Image (cartoon, rainbow, N blue to C red; front, side, top):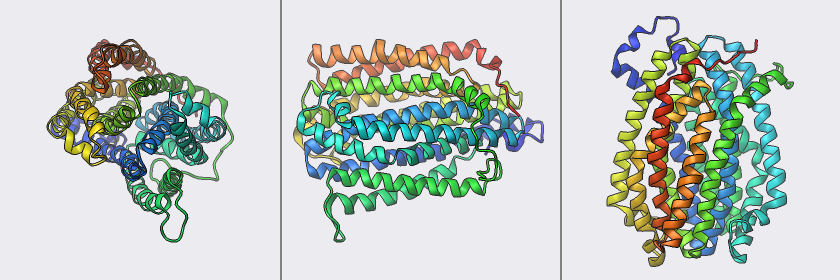
Length: 461
């Protein structure tokens, strides 16, 4: 559901809080499932790769750090597209939305090609930069190099999914990701261990399986877009670059790119800090990072709902509706993540045993997961409010939040607690608690000031 579908009326029927909640959930739950399934791609690979040993877990984890960085850059670029497309759809101008969507896909194509070139060329020094030993570096470089070959398909899938969400369609990306999960699991099992007469590729098999899954995902998404009612992918329209449109989307997207780079760089700094504790601690960090990502999924889904509905509501000149949907999304995210925090607190060891029963890994990972459980509900506030600010076009302040919380709080506090004070992995994760508290306070302050209501977005016709 999208606000655009209600535009012919006066939107008075959305005064019912229950209907507003259903609208938020209608966009959020497919996004939550989609992103949970993206995480499941990594979880399945981790479970399979774990059978190859601790070095394999660490190598894939190191390669995944750079893959997540690439995801973050493309996601940041997509924010500029979301701002323009959501405003156009909210204002009822589908032609402008489709023109902007085509330009967005050209941006995604360029980003994917850049990742392929850089990943193939710099894979080994990129892994070594994280502080991995030689055996882990070789494994991680192989994984990263192969993943980079699918850069174009991955970038186009991320950008296309973001465009669909901006139109209010979060179900198609969810379905595509579900199919990709099945493809990835089957291909990974065959390619990693060498079944069906194929050679055992080890860690490389995991990377090739992900590439195959991404190709299938983009095929499904584009098939749906060619049949779309609002956004329609057509190859008979103008696909030449339009400088004014691209500049506008980059102007809104650049702060989000910088924000995502800062965010992922801070987690890469976490990885580098954890390598100081040894390979076992880093393997435990990778397993608990899967749990962190899962705990982010509800907040991420509700942030997508806030981004989409804020952009569309402002396009329809209804900032009051944007405000109400944002707070509804924030409340629901906090409740959901609070429930997940309880699960982490009560079932830390059983959850980690799904991936590994190594006593050393469990000793590091269980207390770290308890810290994540405490931080989970606090993280909902900055996630969702920052999503709403981005949807309004205020993409600069979330960048400031990421810098302050990541580099002035999360990383230094984690280093002092985990390394200087000798608390280990759970001490490193203490920095996330400070991150959540300060980030939430900053987001609430900015949002309540209301400047997001006045951001202007020129629609190029």
